[in-house]
Structure formats: structure tokens, C-alpha cells
Image 1 (cartoon, rainbow, N blue to C red):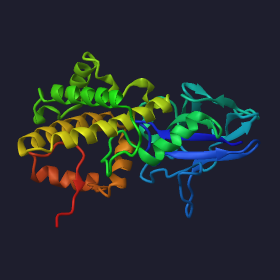
Image 2: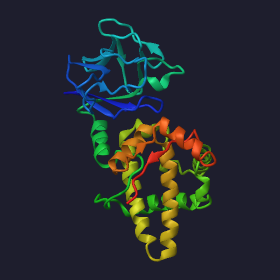
Image 3: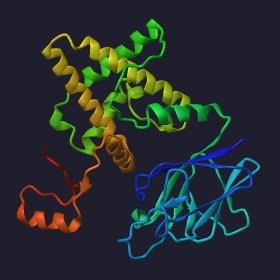
Image 4: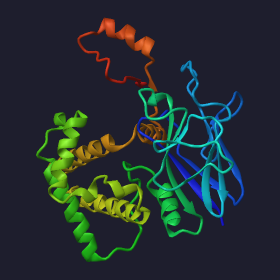
Length: 307
């Protein structure tokens, strides 16, 4: 039996790919900065630390995870190692970590959080039912946003099919009250989210339990996939209906997009081959002087190829 540690990137963290690390009883996994010639991957504890940050707070030998009696412990080698808001002692076993904990490597909660690797932890046993659903999600629905390539082949009861389809239609009808140009800021997205919650549509949005109950999350994503496909068929009868349906689905996509963490957004774009390069600060500064009426320093800009 293995213990599996899933490490997800926090919103304010230095970006890294989600890690799924199996640990056998008594095994130790190093958490550290990747050195020259080494590569951070999904299955190891190495992190690519940005070289433009002068003070490298994530060291080349920072911390270790060990599995003892099916529990996972974090041992600090570098003193800048925290679980939640507590510094990890440098003892033999360190401190136990559990699902829901946040690990800080390189610093604590401070103004320099963006120079810190911040890890959201989920721990499974390889025999857990939750782990089975987690694997299904990783394979079928790795992101909250997705482009369905084919209809679901699962069996579903007619009553349930009707219920989830009507729920989605209610959400789309509510979104039709908002213009496309209104969904252009986190504040507006929050307002739309709250208005949906008050109308019992929270099941089609992200809630706190979305990442802790993997069976519930998988069932939700499966129903979401099916209901979208059914409405796609229902609204394909004429040009006007197709236009309305696509517009509302795009709005729902935008709401979900704003709910995703930056690293999730980057991974999504990479999966669909839209991982455009961000314009570096030196280059964007040059453009800002040329197009001061249209350029905003608070926005990110990307290089897009036109063919």
C-alpha cells in the first residue's frame, strides 16, 4: 500500500505543475530547488525557482517528507519551512501533515509571498475510494473549465437527466441578464457569483468543498458534461437559438475561468496548446510609452501568433 501526496499550487505561489508523489513506508522525498541539469516533474519534489529573484529563499536542500505508519511527516532542513502559519521544527521526524494543510517553502505569510513556494496538500492511501475518484478526475476532468470533445457514454436515469439539464438552463437564463462587456473584472464576476448563489445555482460554481470531496466533484463534473451536451442538441435547431446558447455558455466559462488559480489557467492553456508567452516587463514598458492611452500596467500581455 502506498501513500500518495498531491501538491497543488496556491494562488499566490511561485507557479509549479501539480505534483502527485507516491511514498512507500519509510521512504523519504526531498523538497528542494531543482539544480542545473535537474528537472522538476509531476512525480518528484523538485521546484523550478525563478532565477530573476536575487535572494533565493528556496534552498537546494530545503525539506523532506517521510512516511511513517502511513502518516506523512515534513522535516525542515532550511528554517524557512512552515505548515500553515507555524514554523516546522528541525527535529528527527518534523511535523505531521494532513489533507488541507498549506506548506510554505522559502518563507512564511509576508509581503514576499510571491517569492515563496506555497503548496496545498491532499493525502490519499492508494486503497482509498477518494483516490479512485481523484484519478478519474485527473484523466477525464483535470480542470474546472474544459472543452468537451465527445459526449459522455455513462448511463443516467431519465429523471436525473431532466433535473440537471433544467438546472443548467436556469443558470444560462440568469446569465443572459448580464451583457458580455459586464464580465470583465473580478468584482463583476463576484457579483454574478453571489447572484447565482442566492438562486440555488451554487452546484454549477466552485464552492469550498469542491476540492475536498472528490466523489462529489466527479459526480458534479460528469453531470455538468452531460447537461451541456443535452442543451447543445436542444439549441442547435436554428441560428438564433445557437447564438443564444453559445453566448450564455461563454459567460459561464468566463465566470469559472476567474475562479481558477493562475497556475490552473496556465495548465489549461498548455493542454489546449494556447500557452502563449507573456510579454516581459522590459518589453511591455517600451510599449507603454508608445501606447499610453491603451496600455495598462496592471494587465498582463501575451504574444499571439497570427496566421
